[in-house]
Image (cartoon, rainbow, N blue to C red; front, side):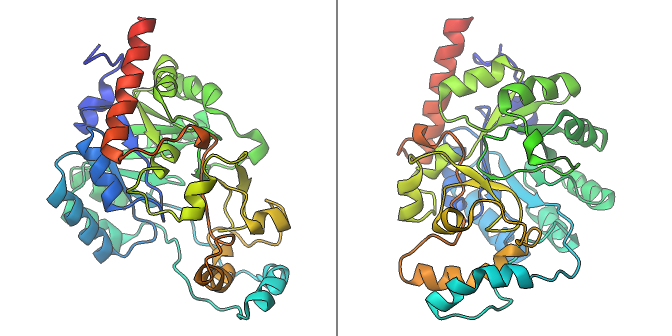
Length: 353
């Protein structure tokens, strides 16, 4: 054991003092949260899928100026849908357009897949880790990222996805259980009714690959971290627990909802399946609707409604991503939370040794 941790491979891979990755969470995470996680001894992450290359450069510079330690940049690798007729979706949203006095438009930030421009930014800022959601980028781009000195981390929701990622050169693999908040990273097909919880998924992935495995989903305290190590993880990726930190950028409404009721998978907010709080839109339309166009297009038609509602202090039309462990979240600064999680986990592991 290294420092009390049963498997030190992720520590060696990342250079972190603690095997804790603060999850990249668009709209919630940012420089302050990443800085806190790094100062606590973990890996800080920046969600980059909705940023421009210049914004990535600026945010990395801000983190580097404030903290010394491993930084992870996260990107999406989805295929953008071809032209889609979203008239049924806009018709479904028509009562909300009328309520808020807005009309459909094509504005709003779009989640774009990793491309050559983003790759150039990665080559300039040289993060320790680069993680990808929805598979991996084209081989040529992936090799450029590797040549920049970054370790490659992929996200798997099945053992088959984990094997696919390892075969294409991933240095570590996140095993994402269905408990996790935000978008499920499934990319090799299969229905959501086949989704695996972390306790089933983690040992299957650990047995399927030889690279370090990072557990994600439903982990918010030391007990969960210790359980993940017992099931074959070398590290954990934690998102929802960090949402309660003062450094997170979520709304007051989102913050207050973390401990309320069960979260649900919905496709209403982006077109992709993601776990979050039951917002007004989800309650009134139901969490899954066939009218919603594919990821990430559903958010486009929703954008003017969301903007108008939030101008009135209403937050029922934008994402409030959260995992199933929300009630376990504690209001602690990110640095303190990171250290506390590690101390709790080590105490449990010591009792079990």
